[in-house]
Length: 218
Image (cartoon, rainbow, N blue to C red; front, side, top):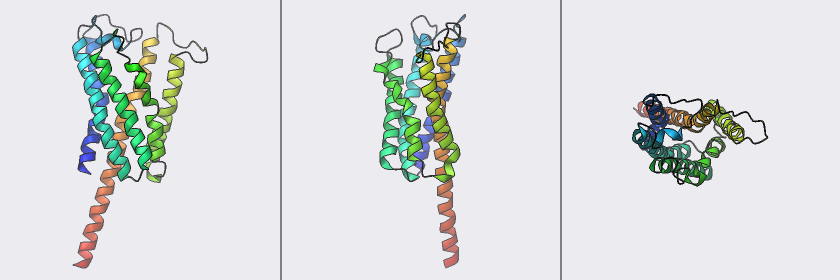
């Protein structure tokens, strides 16, 4: 499954690329305030490094799309039901495509939000959790997936003031958005690492068993 491993490593790079360009673009913008300004502003015409940020977002979206195929192959290799594995891949592809769309159409372009297709990421950790539910040896990853699913739902509700709690204030709105982005993006890399590690262990066990059989026959 070397091909799946290579694709999964593409997914591991997603937060490196995304947050790398976010930090760089903000650093190159004197006076930019993470607490009060949106992430999308870094790709707007007012940003000094808008092109770098937008190219980075496009690259991150592309890596998610590549990594989603690795997730599909990896989940199938680990015994996941093909339906859950395929739906996980689709939700990641849609999310990755929404990032590409956002980079191609920077804010305040009306096409920037990609028709809210990015919300597909909410389903991805739950779908992966269901696909790996039968793996008793992946309890850590399954816990991460379920917690992340809940975190995404909770942060989305807070940001959109569902329930009328008014937790998001102008002075801290940017941090809430960044918290949401962490919940949406970081788990992809961690899940890819978990799946890739389990695939490697599976491959090593197969090789060891083959060596034992050959040695016994010799």
